[in-house]
Length: 230
Image (cartoon, rainbow, N blue to C red; front, top):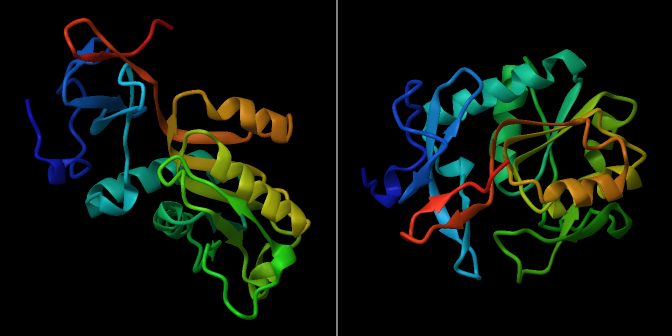
């Protein structure tokens, strides 16, 4: 079954709708914990032999965003979170929705746009797998610090892939004297992020949760895609 590019991320399919565990052509089938399925477009990497399943949270339907936010909120609810902090850009959409699911009336957005009242010491360099050539900095509005200090904080991004963005968020919060009790994402994309998070601190792997995980895909002789052996 082919999908138009604008049709991805628009619906959650019932369990068993599509075959999983075999080869994929134009989309990858991610499976949620309750068995429901989400079709994700396949993005070919530069080597032409590997690919990743893609999720762009701010292009999802409201129903899909609601499902992902609910799933992540349920995973972090036992940590008794006081405040959610979100990473730009796409993580902000998910963080706001998760905060609402947790019953919060606001969240703390980190940002890449420097306002004149921001302080340079409250910023870190930021890179992203989706925008690797752009040089950015990650900032926190100093006015938001009282919302985070001494609180149980969840740091939320849409996807954790290389781990670069989430580690930048951890570094920024550490500069503010804040250590999140949990890191959350809708999708954990492959296992590449583990090495970077482990280097940032031995506690972070155990504190990281996602709604679902996807592997790096390998091209088959027939030109399709499959997950490598476990």
